[in-house]
Image (cartoon, rainbow, N blue to C red; front, side, top):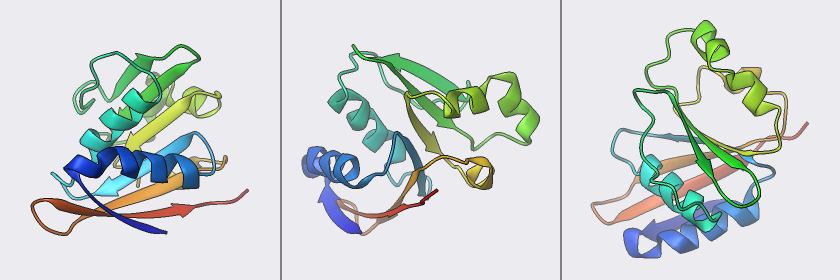
Length: 138
């Protein structure tokens, strides 16, 4: 499934993702500066979080609250091995019923044994992005 959006239409992009994902684990791929964190920030706000959503590049994992559950936001760009993820309890988080948004997921994609969606973001031009959403089935 494909969806095009500009920054002023980011809420519609969030709606598209929520309506077409097959679970609460959503993996985000795209070049640096493609808008992964910006999109995740808006997804968190759509889920009711009032926390300051920011890139977890250095801490690897940020946790946000909404009224029903937690929202986990991981950035695996700097992760060099799976041991680093085990130390922060990443795979325990995968097995919760909380939301999990992951940037740079290539290192763990084959290790997730639950339904998930992949959102690939392409830069069309300075103002337009293309989302391609794929789901896996278990």
